[in-house]
Length: 118
Image (cartoon, rainbow, N blue to C red; front, side, top):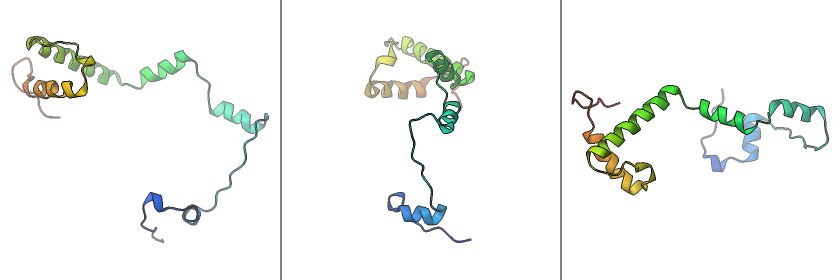
């Protein structure tokens, strides 16, 4: 098997791609109704807002969602114990970062032992 040339993506030309993959034929698209446009209607569904929302909600695993809620609850408890504002979602990153740094270092399990590193 022939080895491929070693080059960066910005150095690849159409001739290089043709050499590697062979020439590709590109057909012009027309707007008139053809069997091809019927295929594209089957291939590319038109979804309404409810269907899009259901897909978005399904992207996050339930265990991830539950773990995130637990972490937010724990952070809010830590902020309350330190007499700090629990509305951390509105903080700019430069203000949130030092709080999270302290939280990660100070948070403990219910029995007082530190959490294991993941």
